[in-house]
Length: 546
Image 1: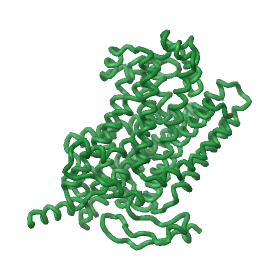
Image 2: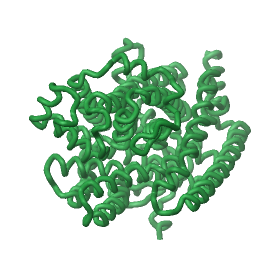
Image 3: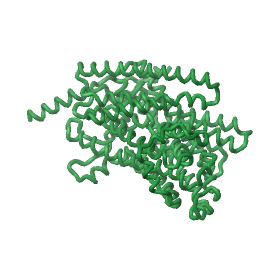
Image 4: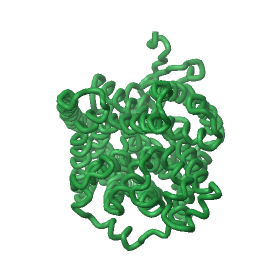
């Protein structure tokens, strides 16, 4: 019985967080957890006070890199490159707007963690009932596993391309990344941040190099950044997608729910005095700087991917937008756009660098996906597993559909196999559409609340931009569900529509339930004096008395 494996600890009070250490943790695979978020690394990184801007920023830099990984994972690649191939630079504005929304949401997530000392999962669970907490946990777990499927596919294909390992063995090899995770847990969180940042720089270098060789039309690139109705037009249809479809694909692959949970947790890794408002303000400020710098790099990477689709390849040349197809296209001189690229492609450098970047992207996501899984399990259902065990379970579950897809298409030709894997990766992202509103809406409501945040509550313009972003992203994700269900190819159009609209009704009902419970939770916290707003008032009073 799981209940026999859970070792309950005594609540210590505070803001819905239990700081009591579990004395028997080493003896349990599954244990009760209601302490600090990511307790092993919470408050472990020293930061300076009263030092210069750059030295202080360096001390706070790192969590932003872990978050930025989710904005440049393998799921983003084909949507951006295909968008460039089909519509030139039109969808550059979509990448820009998605990145700005990401910066806004990640700022709120980090601020929530720093001020409330709870991650998003903990804060939501503390204000809602057990039943809703379990539902939100299941939805977020499915979203993480869906993201993991894209990482399995990307890493397996990279191993196949670089070392010619057959696909099925490559898929099983990806399970061994749990060993990498075990190694990383021994070296310290600061070093993990540095490794992730280095892998991001590898990805950035690869695509910057390829784009530089292609000599793109920079005037067209910058014009593409300007908002245009063309980006959401329903015509023309090229390669089975319209600009609107391409925009929805980029947005869906860019803003992911697990990043909000992750950032609200790892923003707490810095050691600060939570009884000092100036210390909290400094942490919010520099964490925001770190996040925005790293997400700007993610914006550049995604922009480079779209520019690759326009400038590296001849227009319409890439018919197979899977990772295999893109790798082959970088080896095929007839598909490349200029003599310099053709000369370099003959050496095999372009395709090899592409595969290296793909592998780096997959390994980065391994770290962040596992940390997020621990955050939501502890936050929503107060249970903890060792990182290696959590990673092993989620990776094995994610491997199953990939193995099934490879096995079912083994008798078909190469292009059909590649297309099937690509479709699996794209269709797996449907769970992101389910889970995203349930992370964005609580985040916005709690950071808007004076009870929860005190003087750190969102300013007027942040509230307006936040509501516009949340409503727009929720609408676009739900709007695309009928097409997504139809894209599965399992049901007829009529059946797909019925299932999609039923899903939309269920999601909206759950959102209303969530909003009601969060509102009641906010009132309860105000009555019980648990919110940061009341504690902040006490700190101000003590300063006045001194």
